[in-house]
Length: 408
Image (cartoon, rainbow, N blue to C red):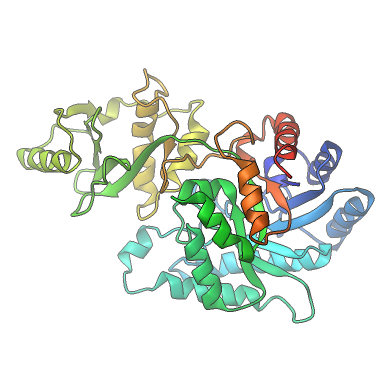
């Protein structure tokens, strides 16, 4: 069992390693962070200090995580390995290659990354093949690994990302065709993205070299879509927040709460379109108009949840997602009685992508570990709880307590 320093960013890096060691974990994931373990600040002296600390502790380094959130706090995951802009891709490639060099220095055998999201730039450039871009970027990263060293680069599927599911990751691994490129499986992500979770774990296990562990539970599944032919989702799968580009208004297609968020009253043409969309969503109630300027847009205790949700929505600009934020806050009751009493999700299963302390959700870790072991997985499982930085002591102890009961 291992614990990621990404959940301990309120401590100094060496204190984070000490905390994981004292808690009784066997491994520690060393995660890049702007304020802690920043690869652009690491020099020979700081790497030597980390090596010395690890040598004196029982805990062993499990993996180098190259931090999808690293560059811009307000736009995490960007730029990515599939960014249309070559300059952006090169920034991410450089970060991952630095991860490989740090792994070499600290004698760590695994380095992990995520694919990134299809953003509005991809929608605007349909001739650019994101898969080809991603494959070339990964191959560029792999060129950093020397023939004589034991380092494996891992891809981590994530809800909403271009590589979101186990099968997408396995297909990519097969196409890359390198023994130095394998799968990093996050059980929370798989729980969010796999309609047959157990079967997916079984398929993933032979290619999996590393696990992330956190809990999760079902929420209110909501898709944000541009108005168009296929804007409205199956209402049994998810509600839909339809964005109208000409007015920057939104329509919530929801059986219980059909709402039109706008600056001005909708035109007759817009009313007709609203009627069509509500019919597609099997909504029988008349819609209610909500004044967008009157929505609360300040901070709240729901900020973490809503931010995590919004950055997982692909295909839309960050400006559109930011404009949607007060609407999500309104639905969740940030400053008013809530219309939705569950956390908001943007996943293939309705499970919320929000990393909870193991034991606080509905994920069956015992069965997950059994399936993975039976199908050939052996390696570290690292608890990743970046949503619990403030309660890190509870997260450290409670995670180990619960997971220790789940390991055969």
